[in-house]
Length: 312
Ligand code: PMV
Image (cartoon, rainbow, N blue to C red; front, side, top):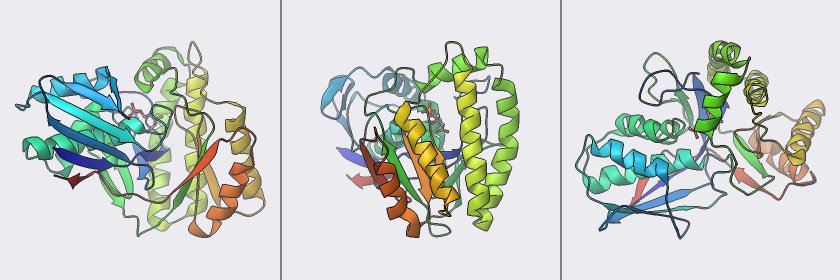
């Protein structure tokens, strides 16, 4: 029995859309921070047949079964019982698939002696869920050309930012990211300009991180997020992930900023809002988000480790 731990990550420059080749490669260069506080723990052990339990309930997870089939194309892996627990809402735009596949490949690698190093684990995790490639690493993580290999761009110590997650709806989202991305690509008139413009956003964000330029990072990340949601909203049928509390949180972040607090927001394929700020502003930002009608709770995260084995 082997247990691995991984954390979700939050993209500051987003991946939305896939390249037209096998391997589940993003169409847009992206950069994230790995979060502490939110945790996925995955235990694998031999079984008579493949079985997956998620938060104590047996589930039929097609994405996981497909991932096992892919792995078995390269490695001999016996049937497994996979037991995974998240201490945060699952499938609700909080990157549970990122931490999930990062933890899963890390556990299987150690349990089955596959001999994969961190880069190879990340490349396998990408095939389960491209954002999972980033959760194998800590700190600021890029997944970008030319090799589309995730890597740590800067450590947590370089710039220890904080992320406050405002949970506005705990339920799983109705359209998953793979379906949503395919729909955006084939129907949104903004899809091609989105893909083109991400390279510039990516370059700006990498520069802002290197120089610890909070204003530039915030401006670039917030705009990139809103561009992605413009693509989502103009897909047919529309991918509308926000609710009134999502919009309320965005407004509160803008108000805080107008009053002089360094903070910016980002939102993924779900209604939760993530506000990023520096350590001395955490309490103020947290209190402001908690006061927004419809916010059920907030989660305060620092920068997390990459996926690792927690017990053998
Ligand atoms: O890796 P997936 O299939 O869960 O897609 C992630 C998509 C976003 O969360 C919206 C953006 C990102 O880069 O994480």
